[in-house]
Length: 221
Ligand code: HEM
Image (tube, rainbow, N blue to C red; front, side):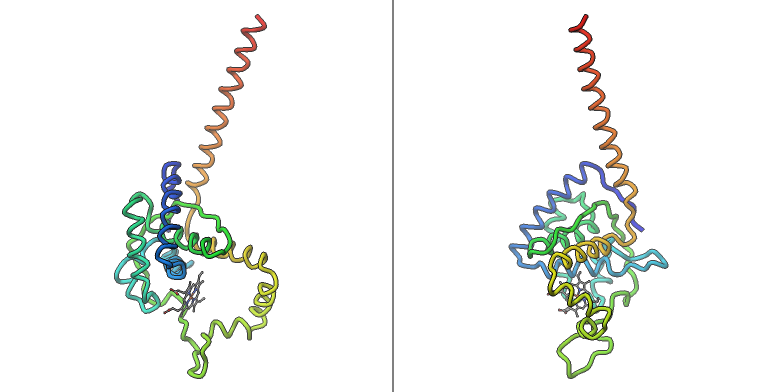
């Protein structure tokens, strides 16, 4: 799927968009909606076909109309304000950044955000997101997925751990959120930017050292 497209200028734009998202999300009080938008754009990734994932395709009317995405048109609309100010930022990055900011401003952990996701206009067929109603019982107020958390011993272990250890929860949550936000996303070019940065720093340092040696040489002669 997406190949990283970030360069230094783009990274700067991302930081500006991050600030605008903070303002937008606190003024509209829409953190849960934004987190759900990020997850529903990313959660369609299919590892076998390498399609779907965090690529901004949720903005397409066809995908937005999937039953699981009900209500998310408001989140897409809110993001348009930030996109208009930072047109270079891809929708794919914008939605994932919105998710990261939503978690942070509601007191959650800081999630490492790597920019560079590419947009796609190809929406996956309906049905890739988990169905909350599967196995639902009419007598229950809880979703089957909520029930599983306390009834399945594998999940219960974590419920108990996280209930008493917030640091463990924050750490694991931040790791899992980052993974979800990067499904099918290649960091190849991002690494090359870092490499360019390191090379640039190396050249500057060499110039300073050579200048210093030259100066020293002049003085000793
Ligand atoms: C694993 C399967 C999941 C199921 C079955 C599920 C199901 C649901 C359902 C049924 C709702 C209510 C939607 C509505 O109001 O109509 C909801 C809301 C929400 N979900 Fe999930 N979810 C899942 C995973 C996730 C994940 C991984 C995240 C975030 C990382 C997430 C974040 C949220 C948030 C923030 C809301 C509240 C949205 C709002 O109030 O506007 N969910 N989810």
